[in-house]
Amino acid sequence: MSSSARPDPAPRTVTSKDEFAQPVSRTPALPAVASFDELGLPDGVRELLTAHGADTPFPIQAATLPNALAGRDVLGRGRTGSGKTLAFGLPLLLRIADAGFRAEARKPRALVLVPTRELAQQVTDALTPYARVLKLRLVTVVGGMSIGRQAATLREGAEVVVATPGRLMDLVERKDVRLDRVGITVLDEADQMADMGFMEQVTGLLELVRPGGQRMLFSATLDRNVDLLVQRYLHDPVVHSVDPSAASVTTMDHHVLQVHGADKYATATEIAARDGRVIMFLATKAAVDRFTAHLLGSGVRAAALHGDKSQPLRTRTLERFRKGDVTVLVATNVAARGIHVDDVDLVVNVDPPADHKDYLHRGGRTARAGESGSVVTLVLPDQRRDVVRLMADAGLRPQVTQVRSGEAELSRITGAKAPSGVPVDGSAPSSERPKRGGAPFRGMGTVPGKPGRAKNESRRSAEDRKLAEARKAARIRRGG
Image (cartoon, rainbow, N blue to C red; front, side, top):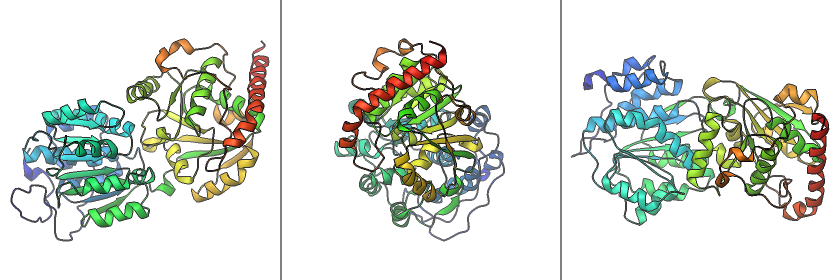
């Protein structure tokens, strides 16, 4: 690939052996491209894009690719599913390949920081085919996996590291990796890293990478913490905003379904029994496990996803969901952070989220890449005021409907139907089944953000009765 085929790079500082030095003058952004053909990509990369159905760049790719390929810092604002991974991934890989230096042991050349293990795996999966074509080595560094194995891979040498901040910092402290040769750094979903408390680790890692290297930061929102990163670590960035957070939900239908406590889980169960994939969010890990066990016993192919699951199990669960072996993913907020599964047209907040940011990220699991989808939130009477405030903070005006299980209006909105009642526990390996025991819905009644332990304890016997009533109602509807 000839350099003349690429956009002319902006002026750079000339320093010895610093192939990733930053432009020093404030230059206008290069114009957006209308197709990948304008970028002079290597044949193998262009063929891969075509094979993956990427005929036309997404807006964020069209705007940022020419500038990122030219070495400019990039500040991209866009939600998950807007095409960010290739917007930063292709320039990163192509610039590393063009530099022609293989990484030494423990000294990667490029770094991608992400907030969650799942997003790290998603980024790795998306970039690995292009890295292979360009003969680059890519390693994923996340918690929940063998740190010794990751250290061994880094000793063998890898040009690109995709990492979560905590695990990478552990490896730095063990002296299993050095970041002083990293010339290109990407922060993906920076707002999520800030929300999850990773800012100290992120800034610590950024202090270790090569000064003056290229930095690319992508975020759905630019609140105070993210703005500090921009001001401190980005130099004269090209700024592009697509699908800002307030507009990221315009392709979704938003419904608030007012339910009564005795009917909440019967309603949620019927929604889960619908045709098609659905992601259902609950407030706690224990609630996720108990509701998943109930769904499996009711005849719904469900699987649980939360932070107490091992990383291999989380990976297998997502793969089964993608393949359709599981139709309902029951999750805590861990699944709201960067999970991309095609054809999810419904997200259900069985428990309302704590704030509008969590709502937006949960909802972002549907209506991806321009597709449509629906977000449904089940609301008990004592949660209505909090949910009204949450929706106002998110800039949304949802359709509010009072529903009951078994009613036509619930089916019209969500596709709900009565479950078969034939247990499907045997469809999942025993190691992947949620643990049973205790009342199935204990701990599931709190309003997020409010103390609820004592309240939940007092509700346990009532919740047992609710479950019995829900099961009885389901049997009656089936004619049993």
